[in-house]
Image 1 (cartoon, helix red, strand yellow):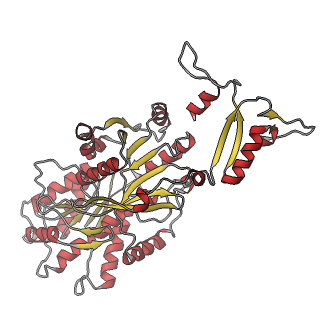
Image 2 (image 1 turned 180 degrees about the vertical axis):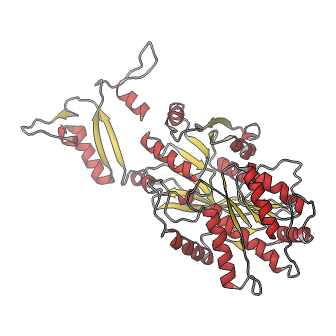
Image 3 (image 1 turned 120 degrees about the vertical axis):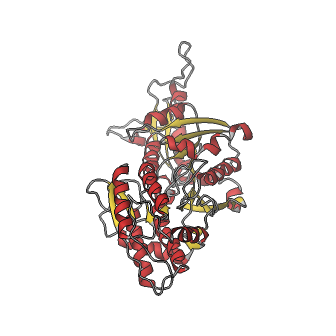
Length: 470
């Protein structure tokens, strides 16, 4: 059975689509379960409605199900989990959930990579880049729990850490970004959804924060699903992780099939996301159905029973079936899948490290808990040649009028843009742009000054002020 959250009368979510897609694939292929046809029941609930989630779980258990997938938000998930624990039915999760240390959830596995391992991966990147100061920007309070390994790091690794929270009820991150720009916070870790990341990048671009001075690490495993076209030549450093094993041909053909079906749906408005991409949540759900099917295959004598929530009579095959799920091994869309037998978490997994290049997001390394970070040579290699780094870039040139360097061109006709100016610096700029392949826009400083520090406020004026603000 699957229980999925949705917005009132909204379209079917990616996880539910992936759940159905996986069941249909297994039933069609017949390789994993040659003598069994999987049947399923899916229920929709509103976000954060734990009462409704409990009700739907009880309905499914009375029908007779071998496992319940979802829901994904913590209050609803916890309600369903306690019912599954009581009646001995495996509860399969694909989203991150905070685990308390005295966790009693014996009928539980999660396919989402465990965050204490993910935190270590992020910390390894920070050390690789030799960052001494880091700003962590998180979305909600669970972000602080997820990143606690990183937050504890300063005492051990001589790191200066600044922690900031994204505004709660608005998508406008500009005031926060402005503060970070003023504070010259160039090394930033963003812990937020990929949808939110897309919005932040657009706002950072508008604020002149997508330059080679900045380096952003994103904790979302869906960075690859972002449309990075506007940022390819910006020079900004952007790094993230991917668990989808896209280099495997079987995996890429399944993802392609999924995308073909998705692209028939109407495209979303300008969201900064790529159309039809299989997100990590969807891939984890697809893998979850396959992992449970592996356990089904190994337990042919298992039958499902109708279970009642008001009678504490657990499913007689539950304990054995749960241990088979925890022991299952599977090469899925998200790489190798194994579980920690004690807590049902996925603590051992492989990640690709991806980074923004002029061609788009590219794999630059790998990470796994045993070997840690392994960056490819070209990442360690020499920094890009400065003459290459200006190619295809658009620059703003700030200047003041000063004969014979920069002057207004005398003309009978009205002149616009860069054509208004002439002089030694203008000729030099034109030649440099031809050789190095950049375009430019000349802007005069409003107060016509080179720039000095004002006694009263300590603020700079003139050209220096322009450079500070941009």
